[in-house]
Amino acid sequence: METRPSDLPATLLPTPLRIVELDRLGDEIAELSAHLEAATARLLDRIREFDARGGWNTGFRSCAAWLSWRVGLAPGAAREHVRVARALGTLPALAEALGRGELSYAKVRALTRVATPETEARLLAVGRAGTAHHVERIVRGWRRVDRQAEAREAARQHAGRALHVYQDEDGTVVLRGRLTPEVGTLRLRALEAARETLYQRRRATEPAQEVPPRPQQQADALALLAEAALHHELDPGAPGERYQVVVRVDAAVLADSDQPGQSVLEDGPRVPAGTSQRLACDASLVVMRHDEDGRVVEVGARTRTIPPALRRALQHRDRGCRFPGCNVRVGEGHHVRHWAQGGPTTLSNLAVLCRRHHRAVHEESYQIERLPDGALQFRRPDGRLLPDVPAPAAVPADPEGALRARHAAQGLRLHPRTACPGWLGERLDVGWAIGLLHPLATRGPMTFVRSASEAPFLAEPR
Ligand SMILES: [Zn+2]
Ligand SMILES: [Zn+2]
Image 1: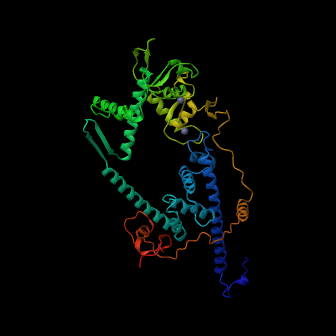
Image 2: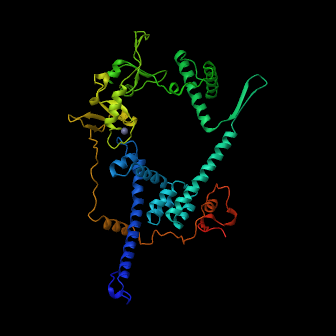
Image 3: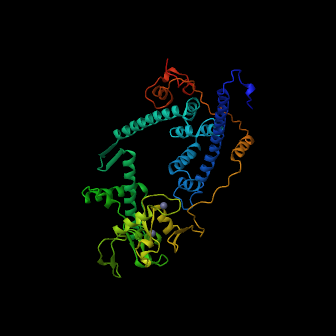
């Protein structure tokens, strides 16, 4: 509406005109914001699909890394977009409220930290009624209750741990017990490893022997675990030793991955030649020479492939992974031309790659090349160039008009009050509200209300 001076009161002070103008500007901001929130819902839908279908998996570590590279979102914001997009996949009511511009992205982002399909309706009511600040405070309180409930559950499980061992009349021993999840996982893994070792060994020595049923295998595996534990005097070992991986690799394989030869994890399966080359790229090396019968005839001293001083210079130059779009700070030194193929261990032949991208180069056929000017060039497995900077996106000449037209076509009628909360200025009592809303809250006036979702949770109890 056009505001002419004749519309104004007769006092003719200059300020009312400005107030009307500024009010209109404020309305425009609120309405355009509702359009942007609604468009954000569409954006998150697409991110969810792109993420689920692995569209980012073209050398990027994650959907968030791709978003950061392609769209220019800060890493933290990119991670949040992906998290919220995934969460909204199971929270349709929150997704719809954002899509109608009724709930801001900031509120949805906070609510998706705690919402589940069971609690979504209550939390949507919180989002509708409260300001963004209220929502943040409710979510913080909600998480506190979640954490307390989790801690109670963990304490209950810990207190319930037990292993009953007793001898039956015929002398056999019967076991019955309950373990906490992490100890249970450890036990399962140990049992599985022992079972594998036993039956691999048996298959090798007596291949005709039939494999017993699984319960019997488990019993044999438990015996092996007990023997091994007693043999090592119940010493779990130093952390470094426990996780050390030994790769045996033929020199020919290291030099050329097409060479036939052996590349095996100690006491374990064969690994691809690319893997052993990657591990040798930046590793502690102990070179052992074998005779024809496989006996070790010479053992060299342990050396680092890349000496510490050179590594410091490399880290200082590259400051992290050099793969396009990757900002991971810690990485491994990669020989652009592998040392086993005669590539020198010099700054010009080295590049820092994070673990994920080191794997991409050695084992997933991504190519890396150093150009004469010293710049690194990356290519996808199909040979296409992977640019450091993505091609710019096409933007319509009038983005706001395009957005409005699209929403009009979708039947969305957005106005300055679309996203206004229902709050009337009451003081928020977070503890009371959480007690009312959270299904696991231990205190709270649950008995005073008919239904938590329609309760006046932003008012204090009377
Ligand atoms: Zn490498
Ligand atoms: Zn990387």
